[in-house]
Image (cartoon, rainbow, N blue to C red):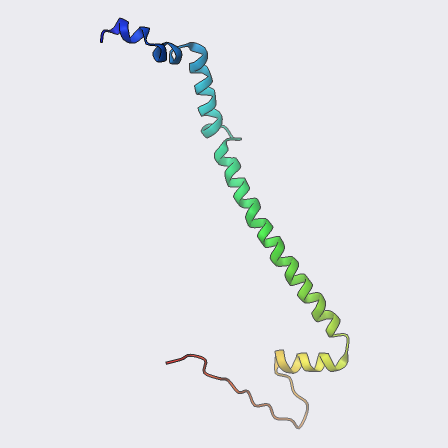
Length: 105
């Protein structure tokens, strides 16, 4: 094939058109190099997904804390909570902590 035949090819004619070259350059620029590129948007979408997962986690924790606060309105519940969580005790009382070995050999 000679240079003239290559130049006459319809694909070469299409891709050497100045408007097509400008359009392809613009598309490549917008997809990869611009500050609002596809890659940046993909990164932001991943960050949004992570933040939504964190929001769900904290909503569950808030719900658990609200139920704990509601339960601790009673003085008997406060005493039970203090004994279980902080190993507090009354005067003249001994506490024995029993731990079970859960590792199977």
